[in-house]
Amino acid sequence: MTNLNSSVENYHHVIDEMRAHSKKHKVDMPTLVCVSKTYDQQAIQPVIDAGARVFGENRVQEAQGKWPDLKAVTSDIELHLIGPLQSNKTKEAVELFDCIQTIDREKIAKTIAKEMKAQNKVLKLFVQVNTGSEPQKAGILPDDALEFIKYCQTDLDLEIEGLMCIPPFDENPGPHFALLRKLAKEADVEKLSMGMSADYLTATEFNATHVRVGSGIFGARNYS
Ligand SMILES: *Cc1c(COP(=O)(O)O)cnc(C)c1O
Image (tube, rainbow, N blue to C red; front, side, top):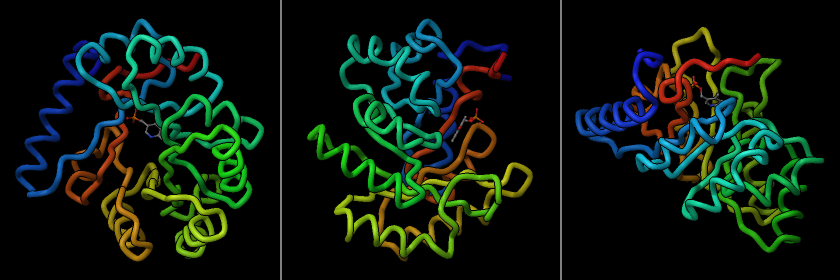
């Protein structure tokens, strides 16, 4: 569907679907994070012009190449880092991003805390949970999540807004969304970032507060 329509039409379509679905299932409508990785400024600007203000990128360096200009023109953009963060990129990440969704280990949590202090900037922070316990995937394991969140809150004095997950690619996402929601409830954190192009409506039913939609808006990505 996505390649035939423009990104602006896709954006409105996703919003309309989310609105209808939230109403039908009597849940709050999530915030749409438009995932613009691999897309350049020219591709992104029309979606900003259509009203989108929350965007996601998965690489610090790529984001540095396009977002300072876009943010200079539209000051109320909220930029989310949704990919893994290396500690040697933390300074740049804290400078550029408004939210980091991928905190998943002590070292990175510590480095972010230190950088936020140094820059006197408070970011919105999410802990990423590896709900499928996949060996190759980033995220804290579900069994370790509560202790890790406590550590961030108590030892590092970080305000953790919520949890984020990327369910295993070949599984029904529902149980993963349910697990993330359960962990958030136990940890007493409010926000849930879950659901991508293929399953953002399912995530909506499971009380997602943020869905991250890339190809469903911008079209299939070309990584070459
Ligand atoms: C790329 C990406 C998305 C968006 O994926 P689509 O399937 O294109 O919607 C969402 N979340 C994360 C963490 C991503 O890296």
